[in-house]
Image (cartoon, rainbow, N blue to C red):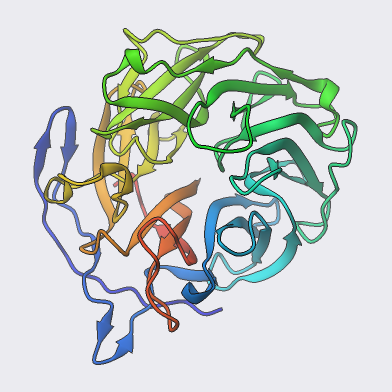
Length: 396
């Protein structure tokens, strides 16, 4: 698969909105995708294109870098066709080209992470069309080509039920591995997500369910925030005071609010204070990934911030812009750069970004809705591409 050309256009945007600060920066702006009947490809490097006509939508991008420098990414399918099959790809040239190395049937919402030479995928084995199902983990010892099978509690079946998650951070801290998840408690419907934290000793057998600790579960209370109805897709994050937090996306009509759940040191108890636990995070009604950068000593995220001129509709489904934001304390966030934006709110989307810091750059994979030779994406949500991006010198 070859690199797709980017169309560069420079825009100067100056915004003053609440606690957010957006500076005048160059943006990649894709305004016209058809020029003289020539199809213009999406921004970035195309890792995979599920043709729009198939209605097999690309979901759940995740990325990791192996010890030898190989990039590995994964995604699943959702929609009308092949539900929650997953695929794994490798790149040995820093993301310029990609090769599929594995197909994993009936697995979705997976997070890739490594422990030394071991490569893991932690996600859900679905029991119905909505994707909710058993929490499972799989291991690869050959860089993603072959994977263990979670057949029972000793081989990767961690929880039997109707669980939910996304490709969110897996964090190593104080001898443990931490990862947020949600319990849905039923096979159908949307909402009613019960947040909890998973943890395990770093040197234990990760495929053995007995080694894992699962906290109590908390359901979102709509009385905490008028206009909000659920929380989901939480990030395990280490706060500067040394505590573990679960920072969750909040399904909120006004968009820019996240929730910070406190986690006990032993991982067994979580709690939320609605008076102090909400954070101003741009685009937080959509999935985001938070990572801490030791160099800048800041938290960073890439999210679907809604630009002022795009507001007024459904903010949760407005996914035409990717913003890079930072925070010193997880509560107060500031937009630094607009990384990608497009004028087509209805059909174009850059979403569910998973990303890593590599030296001075951010490398990222994006669930992208964009036209291909078979037609337009259904809408901004139903993505038909997995794309790879490099954002150089992000701290500048």
